[in-house]
Length: 134
Image (cartoon, rainbow, N blue to C red):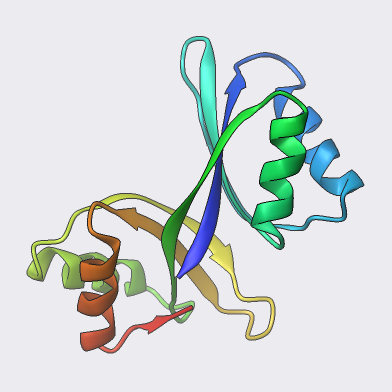
């Protein structure tokens, strides 16, 4: 299981760069990220090399943040593999609330980072269907 950092940031020019700058100053690597915008605020979701340090750094700078558990599912870079993953979830009646892409720096394979309502049930479902989880 991975820890994801969710950051609530004002939807304005330079907001993402300010956050990534703070992380870079602390030598924290961003391993995967997605930004969802809203009218005035957005949510930046990241898997980072040191989630606890990133949380402390951003909170000290005034950002509202939280850490949550997410799954990292390694898949081969082949046509149809995302569909296979989603079908496995659907067949088990599991809903992924969101998914974004990262990659395993050791193997070079894609990693689907996902959140679900019951993360432990989702983990069990995917492991039973032969998926490789981080």
